[in-house]
Amino acid sequence: MRPCRWRRAAGLLAAILVFGANAQETCLTCHGPGGNSVTPGVPSIAGQPRLFIETQLVLMREEIRPAPQMLPLVKGMKDAEITRLAEHFSKLPAKSTETARPDPRLVQRGRDRAKALRCGVCHVADFKGQKQVPRLAAQRYDYLAAEMRAYRDNRRKGGDTIMAAALYGVPDADIDALAHFLSRLP
Amino acid sequence: MVAPRPGKMTETPAGEIPVAKLKAPRGFKVELWATGLPGGRAMALSEDGKKVYVGTRAIGRVYEVTDAGDKRTVRIVAQKLTQPAGVAYKDGALFVFAIDKVLRYDGIASNPNAQVQDLTAKFELPPKQHHNWKYVAFGPDGKLYVPLGAPCNICEPEKEYSQIRRYNADGSGKEVIATGVRNSVGFDWHPKTKELWFTDHGRDWMGDSGPQDELNRLAKPGANFGFPYCHADGKQDADFKKKDGCKDVTRPVALMGAHAAAMGVKFYTGTMFPAEYRNTMFIARKGSWNRSKPNGFDVVNVRPGADGKSAKVTPFLTGFNESKDGYKFWGRPAYVAQMPDGALLVSDEQVGAIYRISYEKPAAGKAKQK
Image (cartoon, rainbow over all chains, first blue to last red; front, side, top):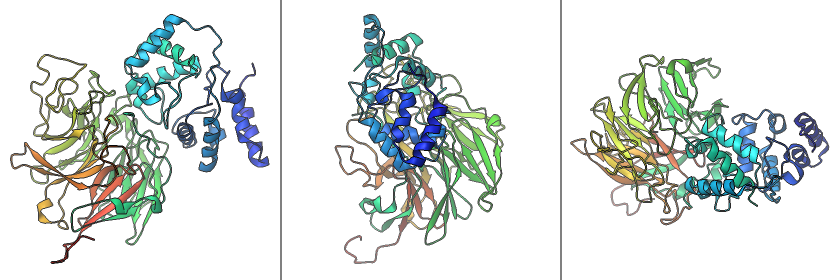
């Protein structure tokens, strides 16, 4: 597995902007082949809704969503380039990169909790996301588990707070089951 | 789908805002007054009304609109803040309330480079974010009124949430004046009685029909408005049940519609509009999401009854949503402000614009409103 080198990515992007190569290749340095991440802590971006990617890149560029690794990449990026990247990645097929065998008991618990917490209302029934709402299906387990905790504990700053409300009081064990279930979905 | 509708983070050019679709009663004129304010919502005016400060949520900015008579210019006065929705202006100072910050800009209307004072520590704002973006305003008592919403859709929150507080302008003298308030993001004071009237959003996921949003009157400090046990319609909560949950709960003066998102409240004190509007309220309803059919997406006129215990709600500005049965909206009215000449400003959070509504008595015999 090739480690994610965001400093190198920043240099690469600078070169790309100068020489006019494909900026999206830079993103793959960290976000993985085809936008499906094989790096712990780094999310998959393949198949995310266009508006979701666009919104998040704007929030990072405006330094509203703190993302120190992304900032050098998006700083000064024009709206049109953000839209182009969002369009590109929204069309790539998402693929789970989880390799460990799923635990049927956890999958079932995750499915039950997702139903009880109405995750599918906004993330839609197959959890592929829509508009400003991200895709959860096939997202990395570690990323989902960490971000859900961050939302619940008010550590994730910037953007919408509705996930803090959705996960209000949800215990760690349920979050882990949700992440397990979602990360294995196609 | 009953999921939240996306806002817009980018500028909407004036030519793409169909202001001609907005309808108001005969004699009222609606114009596009300012554009280029993505996410713009609450407005605070300088003394002479030449500067309008506009708060936002997700995009993290506060705008300053300068009125040069025939046109308006916009600049960003603050950015990178976490939902700086609250703006208030008093004695030459602009107050900005983000979820986790309180800032003051002295003399900003005349000095664009005004130094910023950080008052955050004084106000002791609690850490949870949801429903803690704020509407803030100075009351007739000179105090600064600050709501702290429930950090959830429905829950029994910690004691520093679901309430309205007031403070001295420097953050001292904190006092809780209303409890059981789920999420109030709009209020004003009756011009004669000086009582506080505030809107409060009802909870989600209890069905299309309710609970309704509330318009409340605070007759005396300390009243309880029911959250989370007792809703507007006098209905007990579906998830948090308590024996006599509605006992000693102050019920709303008016029901503002299920999921309609009743936001900004403004008592009209001007002389431009017909006399019957004096001391009545204009309330912006940003529009529903947690409801299969749309509700709100308008500005209503609310006339308090003589007893102060009831009120009549009448549509005033409509046309933001183009379908009665579906979500075909292009704009979302959020707040109302009154200009020195008595005209109204209405902010539209979806397209980042401000409309101006003025009145001229229709000429006698004129058959139709233009």
